[in-house]
Length: 87
Length: 87
Length: 154
Length: 154
Image 1: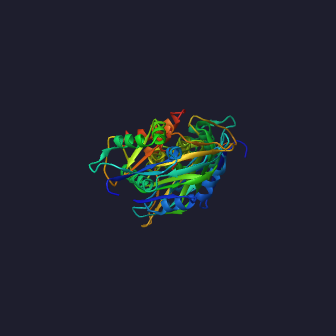
Image 2 (image 1 turned 90 degrees about the vertical axis):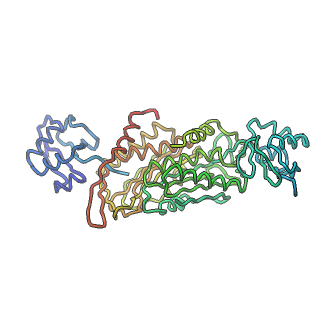
Image 3 (image 1 turned 45 degrees about the horizontal axis):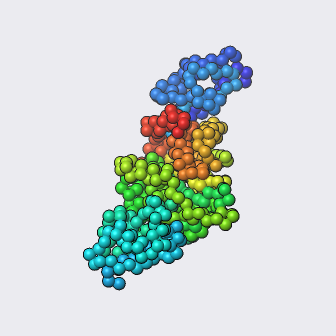
C-alpha cells in the first residue's frame, strides 16, 4: 500500500468508466491532481474519454473540494465527479 | 337600526375604553370616518382619551382597512384599533 | 392553486400541514414553511392573541390570493392561532408549494412579512411579575411589509 | 446552537424535525423550513440520489456550521435522502430556528442554496419510457450558491 492513492469516480463518471475505484502508485514525493489525471488517462482510454466528456470536472482530495494544482501524496483519497446536483 | 353604524374597538383601545362596541346614529347621507370619530369623542371623554392615546390609530370600514376620509353610511361596521401585531 | 386558511385556538400540526402542501400537486418541487412561536425571555410567561373575527379570515384569504398572483405556487397555507399561548407555543404557520424552491421560499417570506402588520391580530404579553403589556408594532416589521407593497413584481 | 445532520435512505418526518427545532430553546421565535421533493412531469417516474459517503456528512456539517457563523441561530437541521425516490417523495429537509424570523428564513434559503451545488450528491432521473439521465447542474443554482459565497455578511 505504500506510495499508493485511492481514486474514486462518482455518478455519470462512475457509470461510464464501469468501476468506482482504482489504486494508483505515485512517487513518494507526491504529484499534482493534474499529473495524477494524466497518469490514469494514459493507462486507460475509457477513463480518458469519460474525464474528457466532463467539461466541468470536479475533484476532491481527502473529501475536500480541491483544485487540479493540489498536491496529492501517498495515502490520499482522490475523487473525480461531475458538478454536484443535490437538494 | 335605521341610520345607525356599529363601532368596534380592539386590543388596548377596547381595554382602555372598557367596552367593545357602540351603536351610533349618523345622518342617512353618511359621514366621514373623521366626523364619526369626532362625534363619538364628543359623547364620551374616555373614548376621546383612548383614541388620543393611539398616535397610529387604524380604522377599518366593513372589515377593510380604510382612511379617515372614507365615507361611512348607515349599516356599516367601523372598527378602531392600534397597529396590528400578528404573527 | 389550493389555499388553506384557518384562525383557531387549537395548535396546528406542522407535519400535517407540510404533507398537505407536498401532496397538492406532482409538479411541486419545493415547499417553504415558517412557524412563529412565543419567544421567552425577560420574564415573559405567555401571550394572548386577540383578533377581529370575520375581518381576520378575509384578510388572510386576500393575502393568500396575493401570494398566488405574485408567485407561481401550487398551493399555500396560513394558520393563525388566537387566545392565550405560553412560551414555546406555535402562534402562526405559513407555507407555500411551488415547482422551484425560489418561489416557495420567497412566497413564505412574503406571507409572514405581510401578515405581521396587515392582518387584524394584537398581542398582549403577560409577565411573571403580573404585568401585562400590549405589544407595539415594530418599525422593522412595518418596513418589511412596505417593501413588498412597494415592489409588486418581486 | 444545536446542529442536526443526517444522510439516510429512510423518509424524514417534517413534523418531528420542526418540533425538534421549535423545542431547542425558549428564545426561539421563528423556525424556517424547506422541503425539496421529486417533481413529476414529462414522464419522470423516479430519481436515484447517489452520494460520496463520508464527504457528504462532513460537507453538510460544515454548511450547518457556516449557517451558525452567519446567522444568529438557535439551531439548524439538514437531512438528505439517498437511493431511489419516486415522484412526490421528499429528497431534502433543511430548517433553522432563530429569535427572529428574518434570520430563520434567510438561513433556510442559505442552507438549501449552498447544498444544491456544494454537497456531493448526484441525481439520475428515470423516465416512463426507460431512459435514465444524469441531471446537469443548473446555472441558476450555481449562481445562487456563488451569491452567498461572494457576500459573507448576508
